[in-house]
Amino acid sequence: MSATESILVLTHVDESGSALTKASLEAVTAGMELARQLSATLTIGVLGATSIAAANAAAGAVVATGARLLAVSGEAFSQPRYATDAAACEALCRAAQASIVLAPGSSRFVRVAAGVAHRLGGFLDTHITSLSSNDSVDATRWFYRQRIEATISRDVRPWFLLLDAGTHTVFAGEQSAAQVEEIAVTLPAMRTTVEGLRSPMRDAQTIRPDAKLLFVAGAGWTKKQPDGQIHVAEAGEQILAFLRLSGASLGSSKSLADQKAEGPGEEQSVLPFLSHMNQIGQTGSTPRHAKGLSTCCHGEEPHVVGWRFIGERRAISLDPNCGWTRGKADVVYIADAFQVMAKVNALLQARSS
Image (cartoon, rainbow, N blue to C red; front, side):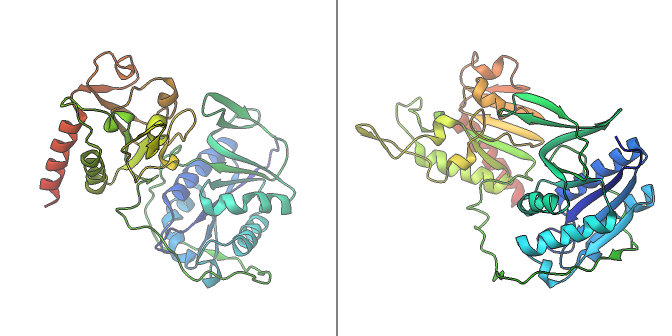
């Protein structure tokens, strides 16, 4: 490990254009911790149309560590685009002369990080969950659907590390007017223009990575209920109502995501708003939320893998011997999910009104 490491934390603004994203502020915390361990110099780079204003959120880090604060601003950087973002990140890296570059693993930086590392003759590692320093800088990440944890160390510099969201504390220093060095960027010829954004309505958006709660639905919602009937329409209404009232993110078991409207020789009732993008577990995603609530799920190993990084895990099940009761959840409610969620929705509705 070089005795003179220099750390750059790349950040970008959120949709408002005037504040840093949550993942960016987590990266600032990671950079401060690593700089302290290495006694290294720290630089924070901000990218956005009005990044100088957003840089004030990182002013506390500047005061605490003496970090440099760099910014790339301009209308060309108001929207994510490979050509402009790659040029901006390259300019920030060259200005900082960084040997280690930390950045949030957001879609904006994932798109350009490999290209920027190549331009600077460096190396890129992604999905980093923690950083430490002993005789070398060590980065930790998971492989094989979050079943194998590995520690990586490299001699190549600059070393680019994309950090998974939810793995570090959000930096929360006091905002103040910071002294920002604005970096000029020579832009290449533009072959694309950003005409605008199209995003689904809030009610249609079910995957919310920044939500505090993950709500997971299992195949039990579409099975016969105690009255011998299937109540998929009611199930859909209850689930969507809870998502709307709580702001939770929706996850799904594989068995539920695999259901189709027409099965072999019969028709099935399905939840039309679910897709395999909602699937969590061994063959799905492994989201990070502060809390999780599983309903109508068996809770066995493939599904539990997807819950590995959930802070507080609760489940609703009619079976007192289900997988969730064997140490896989912090709290298990032995009750009917239809009845429980109807009551919860009523309470949330009363509170909101």
